[in-house]
Amino acid sequence: MGLDYKKSGVDIDAGKKAVEMIKKDVESTFGPEVMTGLGGFGGLFKADLTNYKNPVLVSGTDGVGTKLKLAFKLDIHQTIGIDLVAMSVNDILAQGAKPLFFLDYLATGKLEPQKAAEIIKGIAAGCKEAGAALIGGETAEMAGFYQAGEYDLAGFAVGIVDQQEMITGAEIKAGDLIIGLKSNGLHSNGFSLARAALFEKANFDYRAEVEGLENNLGQELLKPTKIYVKTVLALLEKFKLKGIAHITGGGLIENLPRILPRGLKAEISKNSWQPQKIFSLIKKAGEITEKEMYRTFNMGIGMTLVIAKEDKDKVLAELEKMGEQACLIGEISKAAGEQPLQLK
Image 1 (cartoon, rainbow, N blue to C red):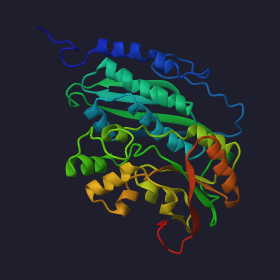
Image 2 (spheres, rainbow, N blue to C red; image 1 turned 180 degrees about the horizontal axis):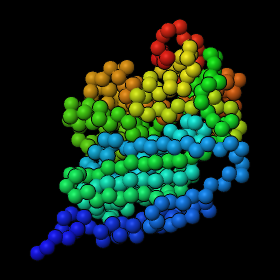
Image 3 (cartoon, helix red, strand yellow; image 1 turned 90 degrees about the vertical axis):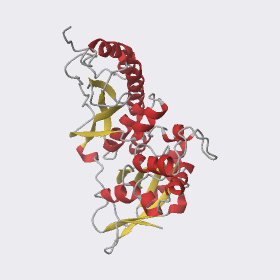
């Protein structure tokens, strides 16, 4: 008998079924700016530029990393799409950009329509949380390329900001204060180290019940990355934010210095907040040094804001009113050749 595409490992009908299953979720992210539905060769988005004098498009792309291994192991796929959106929209938010639209790329060895629908349902939920339209994507079935039951995800976000309102960090000066916004846990970084510590070195079960955790271990690790878009955009309407750093891979040690002008450093007080239990569990399980923890994980702070000292009380009060967990975690000072971030 002759070969066809399905016999070689690619099921076109499964792809069509997956598209039908996700249609309502995807279209629920559409606003009046979206000019196409599913099925086009490109997503059309007519941005409203009425309130922009010098609009600048800001783009970002990212994946979810080895956090996907947890989703495979636990067979939980409903929230991993939120992580995908969060990693890109939080990045472009750091420059003051409002997300406009998002595209995703899902690649797998064998397409399972129900699983694909769960993943994209999470992507749509993340887009709605970020105020972005999910205007397109690609589902690639690559027979023999991935192990059974596994897949990979990538995402692409585009946002907009007025050039004169871009946040670059250039105005940061000594004496400014650093506000930390709490994370949901690990978010989507450091999972190679976390898995090695918890499951290879300490031999935890993926569904272990651990005192101090809200859920079993696997579910705790799969908590989706927090999306800060609504909070930060609301703050920008009332306050001057001099710098924003998304605390991703590299932790506070690597990410906060990225926004500091030359000659300045960030002094961080570790006692100003309490990291979630999951971080101390990983540290103990892997016998990991404190410095390695802070340069790998967010340690409970998912985003930092640099503000003028005189705005501290008002900004913290506004964050509390919005239901955001936030605290003063440090100060900007002059650097005399030292490292650009000091943990005290």
